[in-house]
Image (cartoon, rainbow, N blue to C red; front, side, top):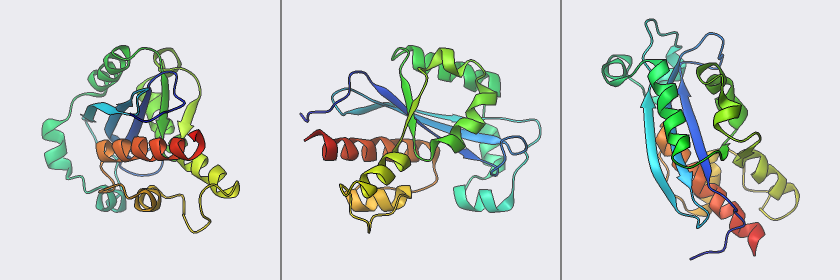
Length: 184
């Protein structure tokens, strides 16, 4: 049992999208895990969103490996996915969100969940920004970059990139390692 400076759980989220523009491109998948105060990661959730029309770029699908035909067969309407996120959050309580380069994910989540601030606490944890701070403070070596793949590599965390659930899980694991660096 490790010592962590967490007073309440954090829900780590990641998204996979059809491109970089939340005003145009489709939100395709959401992955979520809960990081408990004991440092344990639990409650994996992987949501696939169905759209009547998908707005995607070939480059985005090449990166995230999503096959739209297979995706559409298992996907659920955005309203159902939004409710599933609300239910997921209710199972933990009104806690803070976390992610990696999280402003990107939030830009896609806000239209799906306009009540985001009522479902989750305001503010969020961003492992990219946390790592940047620790690099500048000399706690992490300057040779470590802030992409999730570099942080997982530095900490020896097994990681297969660009799956929303896998990214959420890896981000939570990186956060645990960052907490160990500052928690003593």
